[in-house]
Image (cartoon, rainbow, N blue to C red; front, side, top):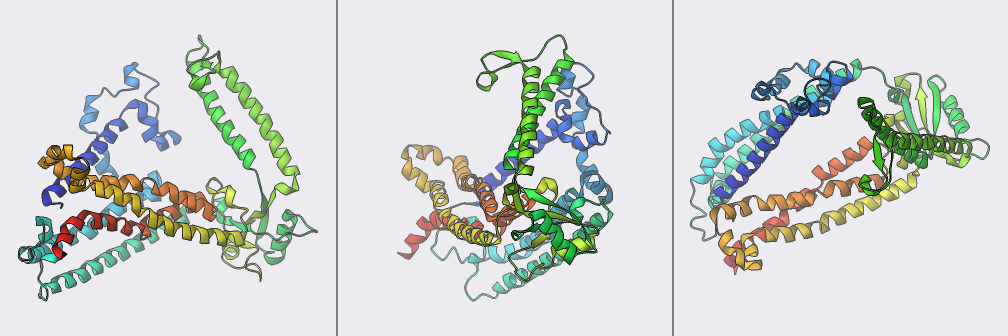
Length: 491
């Protein structure tokens, strides 16, 4: 059973680990070789020059100015003290809201912690219920409500504090949501106009034997939205073309790399080995190799583009429709366009870089079936994911480890190691399994049919945080971890 010392060891390990990572970030941030990684916006705005251009060879990779190491944390007060409008202009609205989340946590938990330690802890600690119960307990249990006897008036303290904590949390959240909503509206009103603000995505365009998809979309919106309709663009099934474009981008990056390398040292042409991972094989000129490959991919892309545009079967039953005003786009995106609710489905179009093209052609009926399948699969994921976690959590128990590996008993009984296993190892075991959860949920979200990458990420995040799966993860730990302490008392 975990004690206060076990929890202290776990807290110390977590704090030291967090400080070590934070220190590594602060030191790596001021190294010249990482300058473009940590200050990309300054380079895009032309406010910063690369430190690799001048100076000695060592100075291009390692910061030898020891005074900068003494003030490497100066950026933190500057970031916290920066006015929000300036912070939004420099780093975006997300960064300002992200900092407010930390301040929100302090506003909520500091008063709650103060009341809990000054009122609730003395109320629970000054009882001796557990001492006379005959149960196995630790000092940490004396801080909980289990140390209050049945029928005691001290239960009113927990009831009143529960209402006080709830009221304070809701009040602070309400105030913060009002502030963030106002910031968001001001940001949207002040930013420049984007094409996606005037564009609506139309899906499930019904087939017509007399008109093509493009002609049908144009005719439909000229009839139903004559004053606001501007133009449209049908969606093509260009998955193969997308693969070729992505491959060309990779080849172009390698070509730029070797051309820059050759420009820095014109006396020596860069070479590339054609064997496995470039470790062995025939050596060829890297610039000529990637130039030829880039030209070949350009020809393939042109041929594939002509093939797609000339093939009517490549056109999908979806289109991006642009309007003259944002009001017209908003009306179209939020209203039903046809008596049949399964065709002419409209919604706000995501940004071009945010579109998940593979899901644009999924019919409405199949979307419903897919969501039902995902709901059932998510239930079974929640249920069966408990099994491996229960096994690992049982191994994290002292008695289980000593029973499975008796030769480790002398080592496990050392106080520091015992505190580490009881206070830190169960959390590590849980986090290892949780690492796989976001990937599984992302795959399920893609199958569910969301049309934008941001919607996929939002869906996965909501499933990770809000679903009872996180609550169920604690049940095996409680059952397995305490079964040896509880069962003998009731036999």
